[in-house]
Image (cartoon, rainbow, N blue to C red; front, side, top):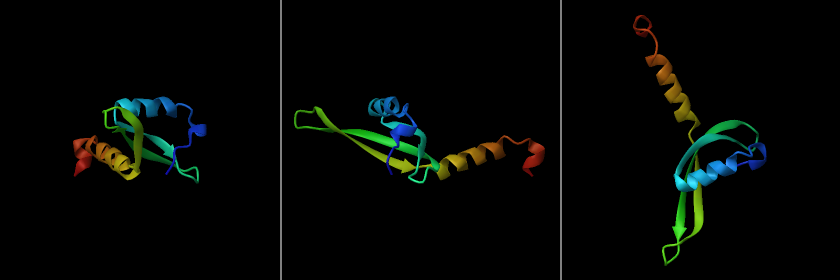
Length: 84
């Protein structure tokens, strides 16, 4: 999966913040333009002197997890009379 920066110019600052905070969750587009939730983990690769020389980003599709969390919240927020 790749980020489509042309559709979301606000992505670059989010990637920069992902470098500082290695966990960034956001919406992204598939090649077929379908939206999905992604989790971006960013880490730096260090040279022998301990200096960052490259950043590695791995993207995970977390759409199902997000939808499951929303469903759980909806069900637990229901009035007590509807939970039975």
